[in-house]
Amino acid sequence: MANNREGIVIKNIDYTDSSKIIYLITELGISSLLAKGARKIKSPLRQLCQTVSKISYNQSASKKLPILYSGDVIDPHMYIIQNLEETSYVSHIFEIIYKLSTEIEFKILYKFLCQTLEKINEGVDVELISFVFELKFLYLLGINPAFNRCSDCDSKETTGFDVYRGGMVCSNHTTEYTITDTEFITGLYKLYYHNINEDFDYEINKVLTRKTIDDYYEHYMNFKSKSRAVLKQLYGY
Image (cartoon, rainbow, N blue to C red):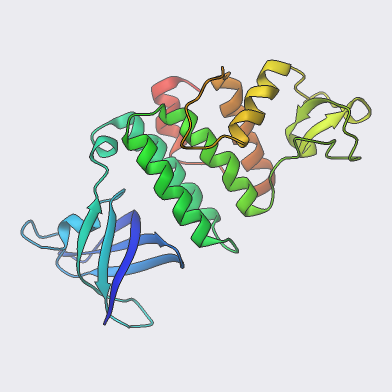
């Protein structure tokens, strides 16, 4: 039995009438564990299967589907799970991680996710935190947009941001999709480089930022978030 592992539960599914399978992100990657009897009300494993919880745990050494034996909840992130808006955005972040994390530096991702959930749990604007996470996650995926040069010719004389060109573009490479709103571009740039432990002291066009990030993920990763459907119902975009 391996002891003292740590992870964040990003997904759980019912398995048989009494058990669950949980998926965790750890410093080593995404792991799945069988929690026998976890669906029973009195099961000591029940609390360890709560999505969003940060837990320490003990598991079997099985190579097929390790069994969750015991553990402790480090942080249940109660504020998140008690609020629909926060839960919806975190579900969106988890969906991105679960579907897109392959060849990635999980040690960095895990630390950043822990910081992200802590800030959301403190009540910081969840949409802004989500923007920061999604933009920085593009860097870990190796498809981050170019901000300091033209993505087509490396010119530093840029005039706009273009999702389909991969970031900033110069006057020679603008298209019908190029956004030239300097206030929006400045806000997007600041979000990308934002230190998650600092306050947001700048204005953001949330509607355009959300559309731009969604378009970027769809174009370069062929990814559309199912969790976004809930957010669209809440906010209309």
